[in-house]
Image 1 (cartoon, rainbow, N blue to C red):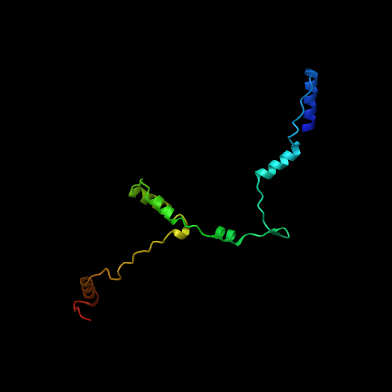
Image 2 (image 1 turned 120 degrees about the horizontal axis):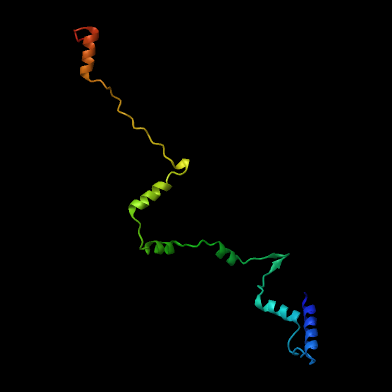
Length: 140
């Protein structure tokens, strides 16, 4: 329903219920549309910005401060050092081990340990082989 229909309906009810005329609005108040427009102006201050063909010119100082990096190092250090709750080192190691190597690129391939390149046979084995193969002389 529009406001005007609602107002007319209320006026009809008032006149039907009581024959007394409805009091008029005070002369100092402005019509609702003007009051609404004034409220919008007062509630929302308009920033005066220069425009060039519809584009807003931004202040160089505002742009500089917007893109300036903020250093949170001191706040972070204060937060980290003020922590009184310390976890057990075994728990932290378990958590680190669980989260380490989840991706294939993080997994390190285990290098096989190379055995020393030596023979399994001793000098006595070689001498025994010589005696058996070449005979009892022992010299080649």
